[in-house]
Picture: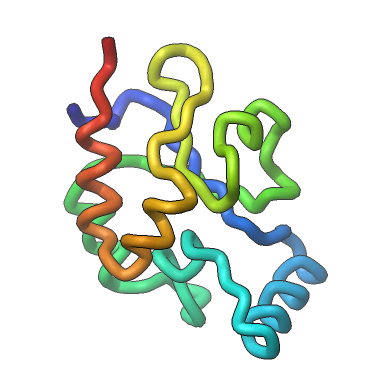
Amino acid sequence: MQLKNFEVIGIYNADGGLRGELKYLTRKAVKNKTCDLCDLTHGWNPFGKRKWKKALAKSGIGITFLHRNQASNNHKKASGLLPAIISNITGEWECLVSNAALKQYKNNPEEIIRIINNIQVD
């Protein structure tokens, strides 16, 4: 199923804003603590990874990205552990791609897109 008509949100395990970005970069550089969704979509490149952008464009899926401090409580509840990709396919927010799947496939954007596209709606 193609999720072109549903809202899909990726929630980073990092805060937005200048302070949040600096804190994340410091954690990543000094403590080697990363966000697997950040690694998937852009890594160190603020313009985004070419491989991710190409896979996403090919899929036709529209994904909005939020930092954890921008996500609502309902978004966070549906996500479970961050990062995650969620959607409201059934009218309620639910997790499409878990933290564990992002960790496993953070270097394989095609697999993340496949997981999203294989979601079944009852």
